[in-house]
Image 1: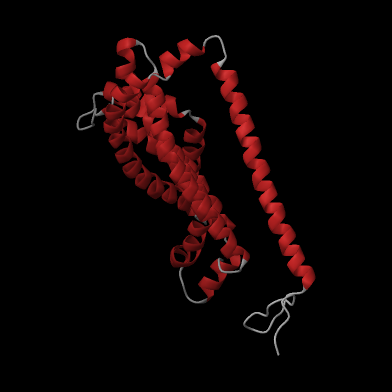
Image 2: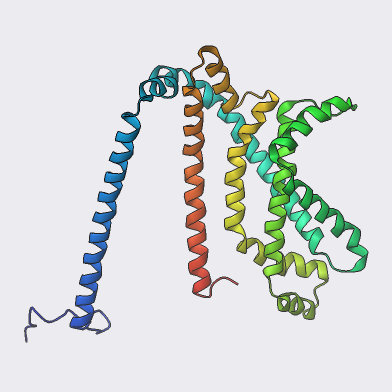
Length: 294
């Protein structure tokens, strides 16, 4: 027998969706298309209004010449990109050092027993101090204070000193992220590991830390995104990175377009990292909702 054209098609397992479900799905698709159209229209209207407000302002011609000059942008871009290589090297080296030092601090703060109290106190004092100290002040103290001591064998390289200040500050934040992850693991996990014959250190290494690290991957990536932006602060020490390269060009003719170019370069570098962070966060949330992540 031939099937009626109005009858819903059956799936491979013989399931036939009802007419109400088909109508509901059609309504949802229509509503989604309508919402997309409204969002696109509102975005275009908002963008047009902002464009008109900015370009019709009395000081726009002077602002465009000072901050958005195509000539200065073409001149600054190659030198800014050359300086960006230093920022990327600082991100890789300092990021690795921050993760290692932050994890050590977090482990020190979670050690149990009265014998480890001095270590816990020192780790807590470190995190409290550097989380409260502004990064710019930490950079100034390390970059200009360490060379003033005239210690034998201590470097005066502004890149190394600036990177050290970044590590000191960001390791305090990352340590708290790791500590939150460690404390989020249920005590029964540690107790189960000890009941299987693992020592306290083995339980921490093989049971607690793997779960804790997986849980704090999104905030760790957010901290690395912030670190990537703050590598530009090493320019205050005289290191020629993307920001300082822009400052050199801007200082010649008092045109600030190179700063805009450097800012856009950092934004272009940060957006992929941010989107990657969002994707990993959503993926972990889906796995956790399905029971695939402890």
